[in-house]
Image (cartoon, rainbow, N blue to C red; front, top):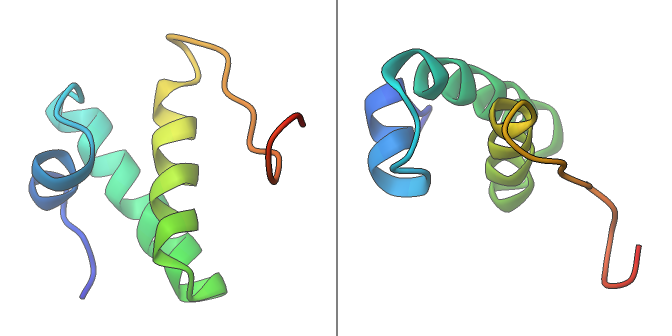
Amino acid sequence: MPWTGRTFRSRHNHQLTGEQASRAAGIANAVLEKSGDEGRAIRVANAVVNRGRQHVRLGRGRGR
């Protein structure tokens, strides 16, 4: 089921504004469609919308 801004914010990142949540939902839906990995979709979407607030690395595993 695709995310909406409201569902993404309520389930995955309560700190987002409405605009950020809508953007994150769109990104997450695109990543999910391409990869099929829901966890990755959520991580990528949160990283993109939070990029301006903090540095985020999307490496695999620990120590990367």
